[in-house]
Image (cartoon, rainbow, N blue to C red):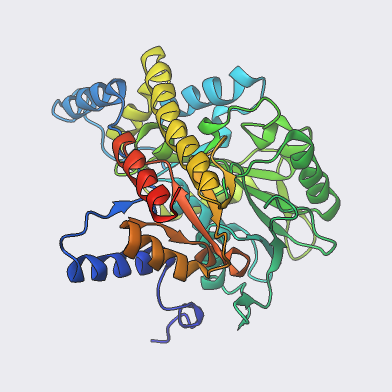
Length: 409
């Protein structure tokens, strides 16, 4: 058989695999080192008790004939879809119905799988720097072209830099599919209402679709930062929204998220006829996906109980306090810093112009801190590193003590 040659075009290692390999090698060479991980965006607080209790009850359901659940609906159980529609959307005055919500095993899966419903010759726009899955999944699907000077020839790159506050702006050229993330991974910056409105207007003018990664919306504290793209007028006609329970409720190991595809969102076929994207996504999911676990979905449903809303807010505030400490400490040490207010991520520029990997090596060898090199998120990330607020308070405080000591502050 012939393989999909697009895999061979990709760089050999995924960013986070490379970081893990370097970290593993360092620990083997320096077993005495107490390395604090500030790189991978995994959580450290346990899953809220309301979800744990609901999942225990769901396990018991599986033990009795009268309450046993086999294959569930591929688009998710109504109990969870209704809870999401009521709490994440209707509560904010947003009209999203339960049948426009599709439960998945996490945002990462859907961000890659959505490529099944738009054509191979679509022009894709991605932020640089940005989450690698946006780029790699589209390269695998044949939309990347050739890798030239660290960038793919068929993509529209949305340059993010210090001058524009690392917020991508609508390009002067046409794109069919646009990946946006707010609060952004890796830079931690967020779109204001007016900034996001400009993107909706661009998409409407270009008959484009925005794939809006809203995995970190629980971290938003500023009033002028929308929690959902559907807060912007006209977004139902141009946007798909992807969310996750991973960073809000510790579901990184349980795997549950959801994607909203409004019934008003359409594309065109090769003959120019309007086609419902919700219909295509439903067909894709029923063909390639058997649905998220009943047990996990019961746990996710419980997250909308009053007990969860209090506990998850406490967890989010815990991580935000860590992010604030990192932001303030890195600034005190002389770094240029972005993020860390509406986001668990802090985007850091070296004060002496080191490369991303040089700064990674310096932090690891001199302070025993592991970070994520910014260049791994795109060419425009060179010279930056990403730190996260997801470690414990004690480890975060110790890491920042080491940073100040390393830079003599």
